[in-house]
Image 1 (cartoon, rainbow, N blue to C red):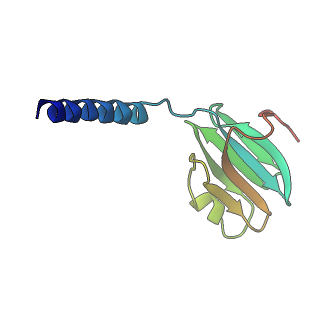
Image 2: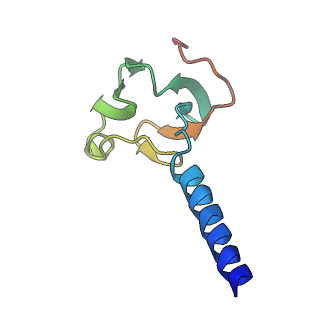
Length: 117
């Protein structure tokens, strides 16, 4: 009986340690934004660096507080602006009239975060 009680305690402690390790792991701060314009990669930008990105005088994006959002666009419906800010891997902002896609990717394939076109 003592052996079984001891086994339960050991198992409980291991589960607590595993749960704590999972919950307390550092959050990845290396999220990058990939911007695609006309099916070509326009650039990669770091979500940790506050900046404003102007794209062909048609769209303006703003990275602030580890999030990105469209702050202005010349498209007629402005759905890309209404979508709001994104910051999680897999989220995207799409402006169909301008063929612009903004995606949150982890790490990025090309770490050039200050590309200017």
